[in-house]
Image (tube, rainbow over all chains, first blue to last red; front, side):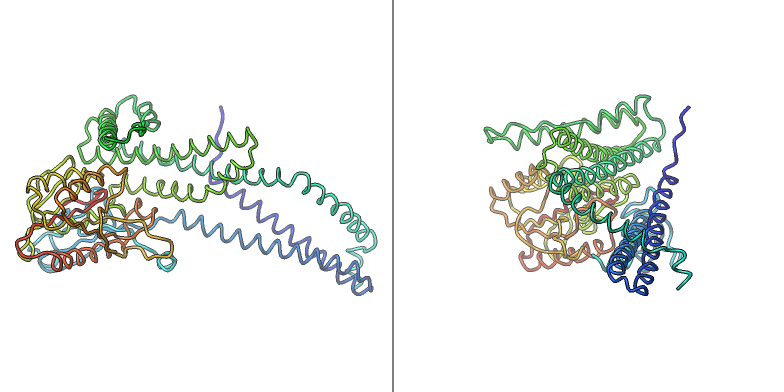
Length: 140
Length: 374
């Protein structure tokens, strides 16, 4: 009998592996930085330059990788988060307006319930739309 | 200082690093000189493979959404999966264009046949579904089929490029992938909205017509297409849209032709409202005006409308609500609702400025009327 690995676990493992690599590069870079200090104090300028260069490259790489990982995490979160779809209910008689979550079977111009304010007319769905978050709105 | 010297001895490590650099530098040079192109092709193939996997996930997810939606209706046929698979591989062979005379009629016939075949198959899968549900399910399957086509075509060129090791075909595919993925993602997002019966961005035109004709008696003028006669400032508006709230675009071409022919061409003006693709950087929901038949699709309806307009010399105005490809097939956004209200104002202004009392004007709201009644 074969057992399938859940996809969520696989995703977490991939992210953990990347964070581990970032940490490893950071530790190695710091070690080279320490060595660069020693070389400088001993007056070995060639070795000092090489170690400083490697440390700088390592720190830049780990920083860049961390930045990219954060961006990717944010993108995935944005993808998973669904923006809510709402139905706009309006009373033609008194102008009462109410927004509620979209329910299956809702459609524009559907008469749904009696107006809670005037009770003289029924509320009708005048619009159904997806709520836009401010960040996405400013990007559009 | 002494502590640091103890944990990091200097001489041996620095020698090792120097040696590594001396070996690595020429090695890198030789590798990039001899295998640079192959490495580039490998990187491109890796990129395509990642996108291909995403496409597969999107296709499977959309198919699952379609299956769940079909099951929601209640009883489904035993061979649902086999039927659905057949529908996802369904194709239409376009008519021969060597002799283009009469090609629109042939294309119209084939498209109508395809639509009917899709709906018949859906009816066989879910016998208890009503007409609105049939239209919505048919749309859901069409989206799943479109994603399946994306996946199959990309996989074809990927495998072909890998097999022939053709750098140019792989490069072309890799460079086209961002646009292909954008389209595929919009289809994937559309699946959920369609399954739930939510109005999509393409419904903007139909919503304008719906708001103008709401409360008036309607009648069918063509297949899945309704109209209502609306009095406005001493003019008679013949407002036309696809019959909602099921997911259909109707036959606006036939509808407009029938309305014009019924009145022997005595129509002062035709106003068409449709959702149009915006350019990058443009604001969604902005309405623009122009001249011409504002209608997309394979061109059959546009052809019919242009023919009848030319025959009777009827002026045609277009109001287009700008939106992106993704917005046009995903759940409608607030900015598009604002665009609908703006378009109604523009239609009213056009009527007031370009026609006189006693005139008859056709106002056609074009687009998929999913989630929008009349």
